[in-house]
Each structure stands twice: as C-alpha cells, then as structure tokens.
Image (cartoon, rainbow, N blue to C red; front, side, top):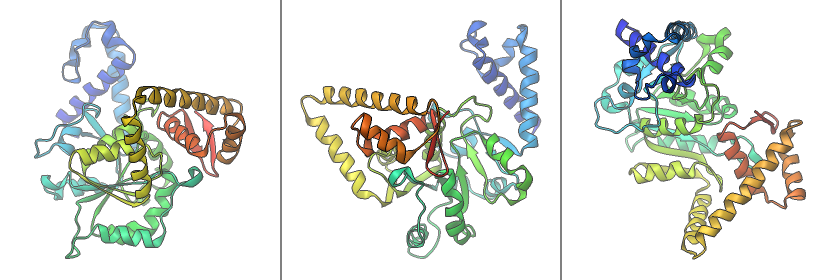
Length: 356
C-alpha cells in the first residue's frame, strides 16, 4: 500500500469508528466523509480514533488482509453505477498474492466478467453437496463451443461447509483455466485466524464487502450478493429450493439482462413465481401479505425462544414446530434462512442450530 492509499484507508477507518461510536453525529458533522475526516482533529476523541485505526491496519497487514478500493475493482474502465450498499473499500484475504497477479495481468474489461456460483440449502436444511455429474455439467457450462473459458473468474458464494467438498471435486480441474475467488458474507478475520498455521495452503483468495471489524454480520449476505452482482456477468445456481432467499437476487440479475442458470430446482423457481403472481392478482393481496408476515413473525419468535436455553437439531425443531404451531416444513425452513441471513442464528455441523 503506497502512502496515499494508506492515508486514504486510515481516514476511512477513522471515519467508520467515529460513526460507530456516534461521534460524527455528536460533533455535528453528519456530512463528514472519509475524505474530509480531518475536520474531526479538533475533537478530543480524534487521537484515540487515529491510533485505533493504525492498530487495525497493522493487524490486517499481519493477517494478510488487504483493503481494495471498490471503485477500482468494480468500476475500473467502465461506466457502471456502484450500489450505495457497497462500502468505499472491499477487503481481500490473499496470503499468496493470487488476486494481485490476476488483477495486474487482466484487462479492465474482464474484471466484471465472472460467473457467480451459489446454492440454496438442501432438504432438511442440509448443505448441498454436488455430485460428479453435476460438477461435470458445470465444467462444460463454463466453456464456449470452442472449449475456451466463457468467464474471467468464478466467484463462489456457497455455504462454508460445502466449499471444501466442492473445491476438491471441481476447482482442481478448472483452476488452471479460470481465476477462482471466494466471496464471503462474514468478516475475513475469521478466515485469517483459522488459517494462520497453514496460510500458504490457502488455495483461493477470499473477498468480502463486510468490514473485517464489523460487530456482527447482519448485512453480510446482502453485501455478498451485491458484490457478486457487480463482479459477475452471469449467475449459476447448483440447487434452488422453493423458498430460497436467492429469488430476489435472481430477479436483480435478470432485470439487468444478466443470465441466470439453475442446474437443479428450476421447477421450484417457476412454482414460486407462479404462487407470487397468483397472490398479486387477488383482490385481497395486501391482506394476504400481512397475514404471511404475521405468520412468519410468530414462527421466528418460536424458533428464537426454542433456542434460548439450548441448541437444537433441525429435525427436532421441525417436529416441535409441527406439534406447537402446526407449521409445515417449508415455512420453518424459510424462517430459518431469514434468521440466518440476519445473523440471529447459526447452523453447525450435524444439523444443529444455535442462537447467536
């Protein structure tokens, strides 16, 4: 990081911490931005925030996490509007400098020509693990008729427990021809600390729009999806469940004229669209939506209360909800997905869920 980039990023970190602590509003600098954060120098808290920002930068550097200007990665060489939901800086965990090599050797026109690959949870909220035939189908999908790569990169946004299984079976075959990037909805500090003993074995860089020092990952999935949309020209879904939270992202890709390929679960998407369309044509569509919201509020509250005292398996939760609420499995699974996206619950190996 050169001196100018360091100054820019330090001001950005000072600004973030001042905003989190309420100092921006407190000092009547609601319009203060990272660029003019020096206006805060006259306040007593500035020196503390400056030292804190420098300590954060030193920690990120030690853990091989690098800040990247969002506009340089997403908007480089293009006239593309960047979503206001994305921060000024992205972060990448890349101890082997793979992304830097890719970025320096790739034309600006290819930086946004990736394929975003993701998947819904599978039946019973299990992590979906693609079999070899599906992996082969994906492999050939990434090739054009002359067997050349159609995409500059493969942006993987799958559940953590599925990554290793998928990478072992697929990416070794493809990684010689395509750049692979993991898009994380979580803080990269988690990945960095976990990989400290084996940094050099990290196969692919991880990128995140969530600040590494964020107190929670409540908006992690929304930021991940926004980043994936900007980095990708197409979206591929290995498996799409009926009540998948990916539906809104599918619509966003399609509205922008970006192709969406669903390998398994196309019928779920069509069924979901049909149900939504039918509801919107009813005279009582507003009441229908209100009743749905109220029902899911009851389900969400029930799930959180069930997890207050102890963790519980998904199978037991489904049985309990059927007895207490008479709710069907699809309703419970949809509620679990929403709670996970909002970082209110966490799914653990073995089908166990816990309250965060």
